[in-house]
Image (cartoon, rainbow over all chains, first blue to last red; front, side):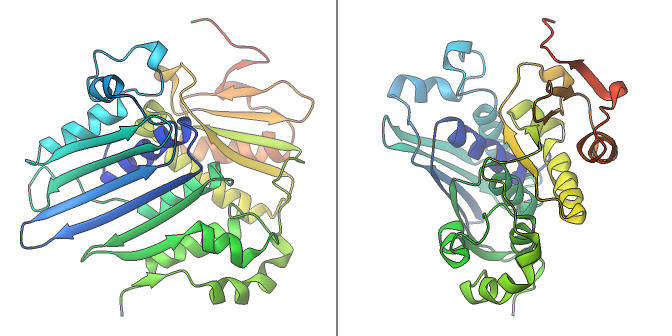
Length: 177
Length: 127
């Protein structure tokens, strides 16, 4: 994966395959500690401890546990290359939370990338699912919740309408201030 | 903080009226972008962005753009599947934004599958 926004899309796709109806994506940084933290949390099927254990091992995953593939191992590697780490907490029937931390200034820390395209792809492909996105970074501060968009649209159109997606994309181009 | 406000949407609702989309089940063509790890790593998101732009420009209201997971043909990614109602689905392989633009114009809008980008028409292959 070239950048973090592609990793986020990939991890969120896991949530979708796990039957999630709501995904929360949170990007935060701790400037003093030089940390960047990505959290993807869903209300999907969840995993038992054994599967959580296997989820980051690219060689153990088998076709019978197809919900987990190379995505998590790749994100783990991207985090660890910077001195960061990947943590997964999951409960069957409740959902999964994936937290990746990166040393923000590390030379191997991949750029954030095009988060607008990631959200556009997620919302377009999954109009019945809700996504809450929040970034509180020096380079980007954006908050989007498809639940409130859905309420505002009031059934007049889907959240996947190209015009709605355009509004969401535009939000990322607005500069702070 | 940039925040999408309900008021913004309401203000835009009137302007959007013409673009209101069925997209709830009744459609003429369905385009699926394969978004497994393999697809995403190979550039599936660029295809999605390109198709969104094409869809927006076309103003069509009878086309569904959606995504799915890995189709098991990772070496052929990035891929899309185009399904015209009552026709066999066509899987297109090893794509880029330019190729999906042509598929959109010729197949999705024009009804003529682009044979040179297709993996197989009508059925799965076994390799």
